[in-house]
Figure (cartoon, one colour):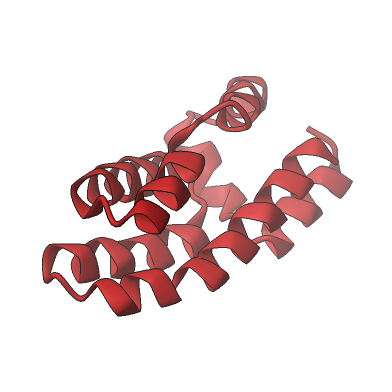
Amino acid sequence: MDNLKKTRLTQAGVDISDALGRFMGNENMYEKFLNKFLDDGNFLKLNEALKSGDYGAALEASHTLKGVCGNLSMTALFELLTEQVKDLRAENYDHAKELMGSITQKYEDIIAAIRG
């Protein structure tokens, strides 16, 4: 992974040092998992579930996406999703929906950084 990509990821809220520690310093393996993130459908599921009022599906998608983000050290997005999961569990649906603006922005930032 080149330094420009690392910089873009860091600016998008990814903790590269933490991630590489989790991936035993193997940048190629980490990059492979970052590329798999591009195909993860949980963000779309989350959006659709919130729009349709299916809060059980929204909780499942948000929780799953949070886990993936945690494993990939996408810290900024992970923190937003952690808050959303708490809101969904507490049935604070209005705030969970309000968080989608920030979640979407961070998600898009990370996608753009991965794609380069």
